[in-house]
Image (cartoon, rainbow, N blue to C red; front, side):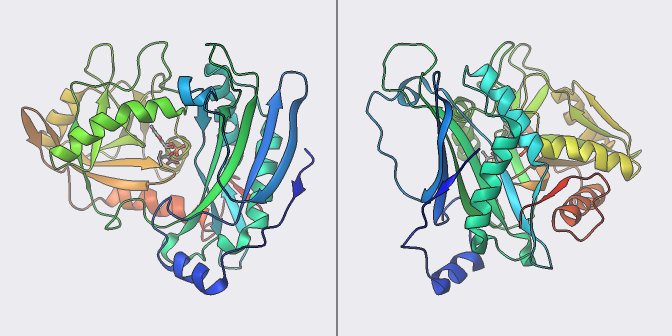
Length: 358
Ligand code: PLP
Ligand code: COI
């Protein structure tokens, strides 16, 4: 893919950048540039460009605004001790975006083009990648949307793919402490044949009211159960889940209607290497309640690109509560450490997961 670059003449100055990188928060500040490429049936992908970050002008009839034909990815660029910059398994994000495009009737952006787009933006905005201290990173948000101005309900004949980037610290305010969960029994995020496995904005739109319910009950995050039987644990609004047993084996809900998290699949491999047997299977809410009560479940954690690996505390629902599985979180800490050590280049990358950008 040929990419033209127009450098910004209004880049954030060094003093302000240092201030932002000191305490970036999550998703609040954006780099100096953005990547865009457009698609039409006749021309295919064309007009790839990096240009100054700024607002888009959209016709009010733009299809994504009406029918939500949109998909996105979430990944990070990490700076290593020696100053080099790396992404983590970018071909997995690119591959998942291909699967999401099939589900949302969007055109396929080939894996190498996706990776090139991300890499080129990171290269141009490399001063925005925080240094390794404090486990900060540059969060990357590739996304694709129907950009044709047309109100008929059919796949958009003009599609835009973009990448924006935002320096990131901890996703949760207060750093690594257990998140409390609310079990929603009213709302589900996915059904059979639905979009649960696709990373599409609609799934997040539908999760917001459940997240509001969680907040109203004093909980940090919401847990969704399967839509058919209301019995099996699926995932959180933006994270996959893991349950650790007292004999060291670990269970994670099987894929199907959940997002196939790249952190999730990496942890399956990492935990195996650390000597844990990992089961991917249906996991019922009763197993959760009973396992914590009996002490057989010793730790619960959630994982995702933004949240990394986060211990899970208590679980509340309309009729009751189960406490935090354990305060110690030895396996959670071990898995988290093994993962971030690879991402920040402090441990040997035996899986070949890291991709050098700069
Ligand atoms: N589940 C949902 C609904 C998510 O939004 C995310 C975040 O991307 C995940 C799981 C974790 O996926 P990954 O590890 O690829 O970031
Ligand atoms: C991610 O972890 O990348 C996510 O997309 C979760 C959330 C920010 C939507």
